[in-house]
Length: 560
Image 1 (cartoon, one colour):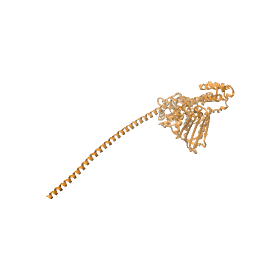
Image 2 (cartoon, helix red, strand yellow):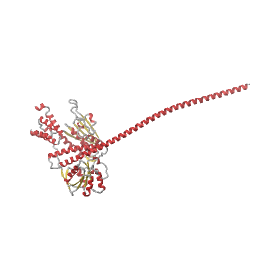
Image 3 (cartoon, rainbow, N blue to C red):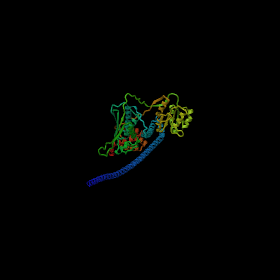
Image 4 (cartoon, rainbow, N blue to C red):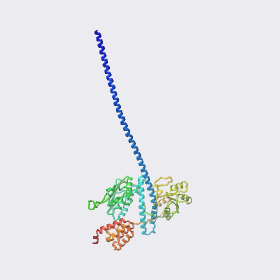
């Protein structure tokens, strides 16, 4: 019995242990299953959150991509619009340039002929000079617009080569000394030595920069002075042009380099002229790797501090490396060509404009050339077999067969081996490549410069010219104001009114009247008569009003 009881107890204890083990295992399994389920749930929720966040980021990215795509499309459209606008501007400039060059060709061409004509009376010769100056002014506007378009389009190339730096500067200074003296203002030059004799630069563009800036200073300075300063150190040239003009207002100075910029009347440096000089000067300075800056001061109200101080300072910095041992040929004195040695040369002029054909004939026939004219490209091709010219001058814009097609046909058909020059008003064609062997040196722009045309003919035909010195008209030495005996204020005021009206004959008659008042007035009247002959009415106005202020400050003083 005891053994049975012990066995039952042991068996019960074993069942209890087994049950406890099973219960523990079941608990662990249940807990594991709960944890697994919870972990799966948490993981699913996290996965859902990550997926949602990823979807949101994907949508944002898609929106950004679409935004970039739209932006790129807009940029491409804007770029295309800008390109089309630039092309349209170039076409407009080309068209306007060509249309203006055509009449200017006749104006300047015949003006050059009349200037060289010794039979023209002196008083008519002065009128011819005025006509030519007016034509040159219009041409400068055309050239300025073209230069801006070429610089903006990246088509302007600098021709850096050794140039006589000192001689160039001295020549420019002398030119503006005469202009300043004619206006009755002082021109000072401060050239810090030593200056190099020869530097490497594009002489044409350097001259253009300095002439544009100095021209503005002299033109718009009514009283006082213009000072030109130059220093050169470590191959860096610093040019400074300072004037005592009206100055440029603070609100306008930032626009002074913009094309066709116009300032207020007080800001005269930025107004008048073509409005392109400073723009081109700044663009050329940048193209040459230099820097142009401007500072200015406008006079304040009367009685305020600085009320009597105004003026503008332009500073130009350019890297101009000195060239040692280089020899640059000096410019020869100007001569007029009156003929050439050897057999008579035949020139075929091809142009649809009769006026232009006649102009070239009038330029060349007196020098001994035989001129044959063709009014179209087809007429040129028909004439060539029987004509046998020594040289051909070809226009481009012609009805039917244009100039390029005509030249191409001449060469392909072997109609003539004569040198061909393109004489055209389309300046933009000069730098373009072509398949007929016409180089930039064979391109002569309208208006035709007589010397440029004759230089080309002389080089192509190997001509030896008959030359005579040109008739140089020296500028009269300026008469200092202190030597003038001024007439009464009533005469000065009448003269001022006539000048303001631009009545030339009235001005001359009034000057004759002043001169008749007494020999002491001859110097004053003679100086103003010289300015009137050059139509420098602004300079006359300044001199007359300065004379009124200096000698006749008030009516009471005049009466006394």
